[in-house]
View (tube, rainbow, N blue to C red):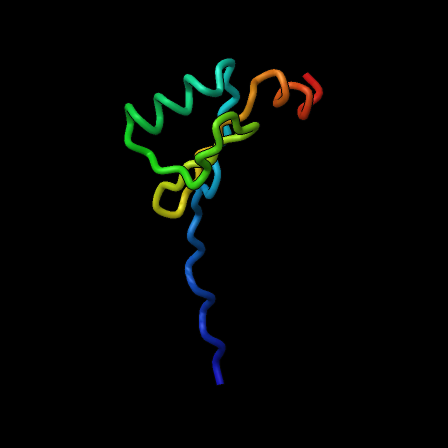
Length: 71
């Protein structure tokens, strides 16, 4: 009995995080200008996620991102 070959590996990106200096303005650009959909409709969120057909776009305050990566 021969073993079946493993299924081909599919590489994909599930999350893209952008560090932004103005979260409200960036959210408006991607939501209102680009038409991205977000489940987060808070007035002043700390982080914003957009759903994009299997991939998520995250907007994160640049200063906080720099702290997270020790920059």
